[in-house]
Image (cartoon, rainbow, N blue to C red; front, side, top):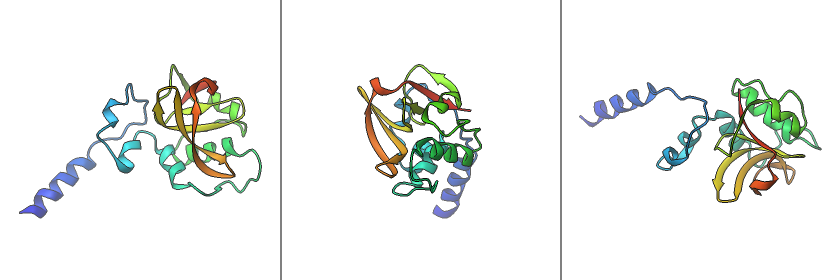
Length: 148
């Protein structure tokens, strides 16, 4: 009896479409954990899988190159260049940080993993020479961009 019920539950979950759109608030994500937490931003999942590596093979200034790689793996168009500032053109500018958005700084770019007070936690390439996680003051961010 448990197996058919479990199977029916799993089939029902697979029918729920995952949208790649910015969340209007983070409150809907609080109860979700694991990989499903980032279902709306598969590029963030790609970045998290590359933690501790350098998927680009580049030795210098490869943060935007890695973001382009993750966006393209997700079917997005990318930044249009290999500089951090080129990621301003990767999609729609947002009024503030959102999980999954690109956080563009003058000389660095990453993907927002968490928002906490006056800081954002980003997953980015070329973070201490690997894909890493770091916390940045919100004041350093030039713009937040939702990839298209």
